[in-house]
Length: 167
Ligand code: COA
Image (cartoon, rainbow, N blue to C red; front, side):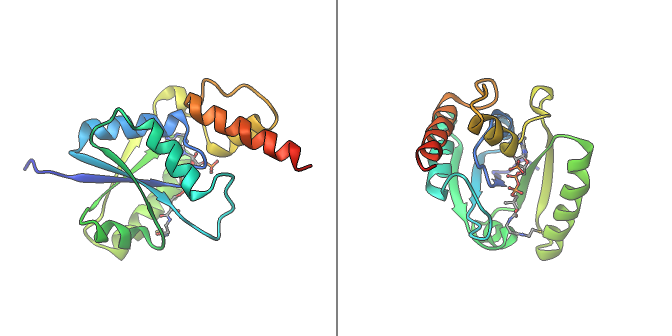
């Protein structure tokens, strides 16, 4: 059965990397619409505010006509239900991601039996990427140009300068 499906790609995106973008672009080729859902978790310490993370993502998806950026608070399962979707996208980089993601996928299905988690294998060139590693390299003034979009690299540079100025 072919029908119109909106897929949700959730995450912290602190900040967005080329690895995330790769998953977003590939998801946009598979589903009618994609919502990139930025988790607004006040208990987690982020480098970028929720508005900054949304802004960086929005700039990156401008050319993808069927992708939107939203934010959500609370349980992901509740958010997915609130927008009448049931497809959750997660990227898998290495085998160790699978164990964690499998547990979360089963728990989300327990919270809402309609939720289907679809895993996309990260492209080989991004297997080693993570937002924390990028932040660490950027704050130590390393070269991150191959790992994030240009505007994200600029935003990281600004954070580094702000950090230095505050010392
Ligand atoms: N390319 C590059 N990096 C990737 C990646 C990819 N394709 N996929 C994941 N990553 C990295 C991220 O950069 C991030 O790196 P970091 O840990 O260094 O910051 C890490 O993998 C995990 O990031 P992400 O996929 O964004 O997950 P998250 O743990 O930040 O957020 C939520 C996951 C938001 C989906 C989850 O916390 C959630 O559902 N929260 C809502 C509360 C809830 O419902 N809880 C119950 C769940 S059963």
